[in-house]
Each structure stands twice: as structure tokens, then as C-alpha cells.
Image (cartoon, rainbow, N blue to C red; front, side, top):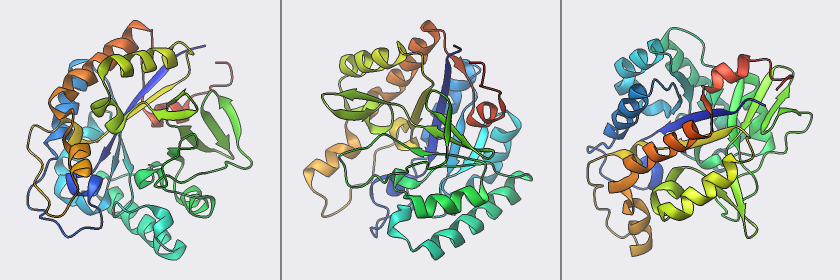
Length: 280
């Protein structure tokens, strides 16, 4: 069985990641973390899938066009970075339609993919995604955190480990590793915040299965800029936004080397979607 790796980024700013509903100072941006990721990936000739929050797509339009021309997969991450389950189904559909149109007007072609903010989606809203897109990557194994949603994939067939299809629509499961009954995500803040030796062990354990590996990161994880202080947040929340940022770029490169050593081929979701995976 071939081994595939997909490096994904949720292209959102610092306030989207941790303060989506708070009235915070938005003049400071940490989107330079996107350039850090692109520079590392370009050196390795890795193409990735980038899920863009619609409301910042306009100011990134020139960069997104270049990324698209360079072979990266540009996908959608909602108009606002708010969990779909916290929006009425009607408003959610309107956000999907509006944001997709904006992103397509920038790129000049159809946008195939979607990922829900905070993976906070349910079956009813997932049905709306299926109407408008050709693939999604919002599914994770059940989490104990209340912020995550759950999709049941009724009618889907697992055509390849962690890849599911239904009438031409593809769902890509985000990689997790089960430890002591917990499904720990192999991406995002987990890579940044957890001790490297533990993350290395957990990632290696997953890679030994040969299943597709889906990493997700954010610009905030790789940005060299300090995060603006936000009044009134607790110390725990402050730590969660800051811990591990200075070493994240090195960890990112270490994960890439692990994937190379294990014989993984780097692809985008759009490339995987078009592959015939029935023969492994």
C-alpha cells in the first residue's frame, strides 16, 4: 500500500484561532506564519492544501493566486472562523455560498475543498458542504473536548484507510493517535505545545500503520511575531496561545523528515481526490 502525506494549513489569523468572537485589536497580523510554512515546503518541493477563512481572502488575493499557480490546493475554511454548529443552518449555507464565490473570483476557477473551523460540524451542516464542494476534511475521531463536532458519514465507503467516498464526494479524516483512550490530534497546537519526544513517539506509532497522514497547522504556530496581549484572558488560555511557538518551525521540519524516512509521498487533497485508490 502506498503511503501518502498531506500537509494542510488553516489560513486564519491569531484572533480567528483563539478569539473568534472577542472584540480584540485586529490591526496586528500573524499571517507571516503562512510564508514560513511555504518557504519550508518550497525547499522540499512539497505542495499542500490550504483552507482559507473567507473574510481575509481579499487581502491575501495576490499570494493565493501565486500559491495556486505553484500547485498548492486552495480550499475554503468558512467565511468567518466560527464553528458551524454555532450558526443556524440557513446562515451557514449563505456563508458557504458567499465565501466560495469570493475565493473562486480570486483564483479564477472552482474551489473543491472545505474544512470546518474547529472541526465543529454536524450531519445537518455537513449535508450543505456536500452540495457545494467535492471534498471535505472536517472529520476526526471522537474527541473529549466539547468544541469539536461529529460527522457520521452515513452512506460513505472507506475506499482507502481514513479516506471515504459517497457519489463522487470525498471525506479525508484528520490524523489522530489513540493514547490511553484519547484520540490525540497529530497537528495544530498539539505539535507546538506537547514535548517533542512524546509527539515524535506518537507520530512514529501512527506512521508505522502506513495510513495516510494528515497534518494541520496554522500561521500563528509558525509566526515570528509576538501575539498581542488580550485583556481579561486567563493565564491558561494565554499559555495555550504562546507555548512552543519558538520551536515550532523546527518541529515542522522534523515531522517532514520523519515522513520522508518512512517513505511517504507528499500530495494535496485535490490530488488524492482524483486518484484511483481502489488498488492501494
